[in-house]
Image (tube, rainbow, N blue to C red):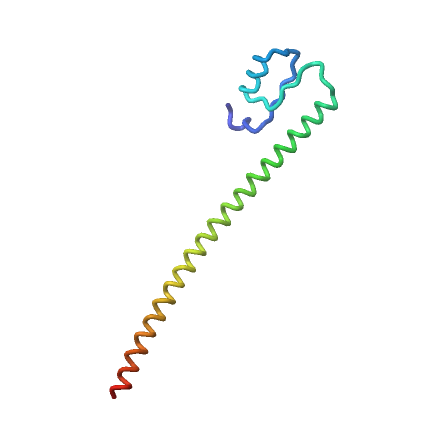
Length: 109
């Protein structure tokens, strides 16, 4: 199937009531299968529903992409913050060690 056409919903309008034809139609990529004679209002309602589904699917994909980007940003920020915390802990340990050394020097002076 052409990638440019994969998102186009296909509805079959047919006079065939054969189960095998319906199954073949769905396997071929149909999203709906309507037998003739059909009601025009029903057909329009089905088309409207498919357009809504398509729009919602597109919006969902967009939101998923946005969330993925935000998640990558959060992970990078989290990594930076963890590194800063590690650096602060090391600085505190170094300061405490120096404090102990100076205290010993002061007490032994």
